[in-house]
Length: 147
Image (cartoon, rainbow, N blue to C red):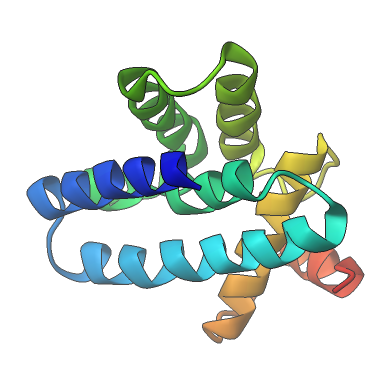
């Protein structure tokens, strides 16, 4: 998981330099909670733990940087791609897996690849743990998550 630590450190440095206040505090809590849930679900689903942890940490990164969540999945995916390419540690296939999952994670109403499903489920579980009221697609997904 050495690559994970490098990407996590890039994300934390970015947040430290560019994010402030409520969005920053909220993001730190959410990103580590989702990362932990991704690892748990990845173990159960026999997915790569390192890629899953990276997806969890980076999935909402654009929100505190832009101070809004409009189109955040696509924007976070682009930020993730920059981080992954900058590190030089990932194959094109790994970058594609990570960025696709991040880009897809807001589409709770549809079924995508295994890593996209992983981040969708981890994100929903995190929102439930934070006491948020889920909208219909997320509520339906929550009822179907197998732990």
